[in-house]
Image (cartoon, rainbow, N blue to C red; front, side, top):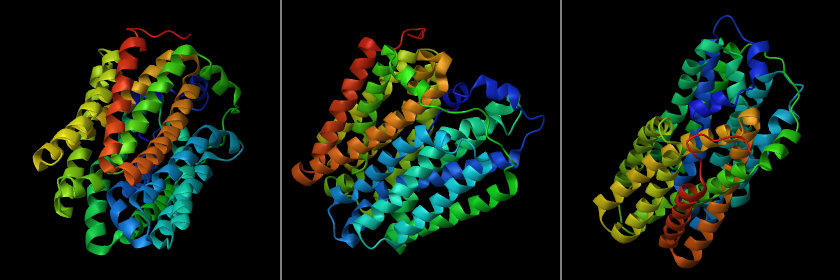
Length: 407
């Protein structure tokens, strides 16, 4: 998943900031983390744009191929809250190098996969890298630059997310059509290898700071407002991935678009997500409840539009672009809500969100796959609309007030 700059920065422990602040900025290391985010998000998004050829080549259904998303999500949910605990005595740069090595291995295994189990193993490896990176990247960035430069550093790192969101799906679909889906994963592996080289040169020694534990996770999870927020995360993420995982199959079967047009539509989704992230942050500063509720409501509208008007190429393209815009705004509002609901344990709240998001991705992909295989691809979009509409209603009724206090 992607993380908004404001939410990630709020989640950094204050004691870490005070005890380990640098007097100069390690911009090379910051840039290497931006490359890391680009590589991870690219690898995460590739299956959605390559689902049909993967299924055909491996001789499996599109629903089964969609479980490549599920595998990454399940392991990411486990890796996110536990990585800091497992590696608590290891230099942080070594941990980051190890996570990037796992990213390379995942892409190579996916490119060489000769069966669904091998592909799932590749995606499990990616889940370890993905969850681990997002759970540790903000605290790592705090140690690479002086505190007054942290917003700029996080902006640089998150450009990797924006670039991958815009380019991964359409380029993956195009490369897959010209040279085959395996080539797309090999290119992703090369990008990850270049990232590792930059990280080896630029990331300084970063001895572990503090001792992580499970107690803070349990304490935060007991808070009523946190539980409501996590319910909304489940509804939004499961609804999104139940539909978006199978968006290429929908575009091929309902409006019957060719691969070039599908690539353009997916590019529009990515561009919409880029601007949605910006708009979500702008709105969250003025009305957090509106920011959190509006995004899933727009996804619901987009899902219904595809069901009702999906045979039209123009209507489908507009609906997918709106969907991208809405989903781009999702992390900003949700992360801000969780951080404000637990200001004294913001890092634990952020870890819970990452884990819950990944579980919801898995649930959405599994349920979406079952719907696609048994009731047709349109049924997955029907669930997307219902789940995200329920999320919006939940926020309007039970969501954050103007100011959210810790419960």
